[in-house]
Amino acid sequence: MVTIKEIEYESLDALNKLYDELTGHPTKPQKLEAAFRSIQADSRYILLGAFVNGELLGSMMGIVCQDLVGECRPFMVIENVVVSSRSRRQGLGKKLIAALEAIAHERDCYYIMFVSGEKRKEAHIFYEAMGYREEKVEGYRKHLSSH
Picture 1 (tube, rainbow, N blue to C red):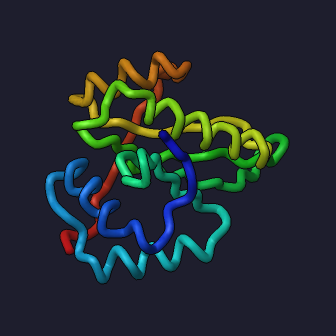
Picture 2 (cartoon, helix red, strand yellow; picture 1 turned 180 degrees about the vertical axis):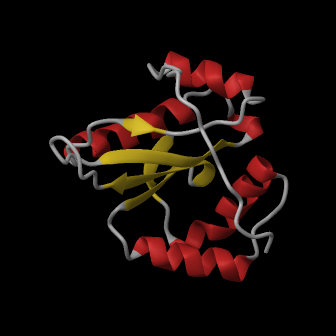
């Protein structure tokens, strides 16, 4: 049975394992806990997990950002999308995105955006199947520190 719900403190170790799978290196537990406590206190952050029989096997985070142009409607940014390699193609990602989209609608978001590394071709196929389209925009990133 799959349950989509907000991730709680008790699932941080399992979340760290998913992030290790996503990035290739684990997050320091103390830093993860401090960041988790911070976002947990901020209603603009939505950290969802896909639990299968109680085990965390997927996660993604949505951040609601207030815009200041046009109708001044908020938009959502999606980050840290991961489904365990042993659980892919079972609908977990679809359920996570659907849950975040429902929250974006509830909060009157104008659009949802995210970036994905150009080498993640399998993920791109999934995103397009979910109705997301590549737009002709340029993405830029500047890493500010190495620690």
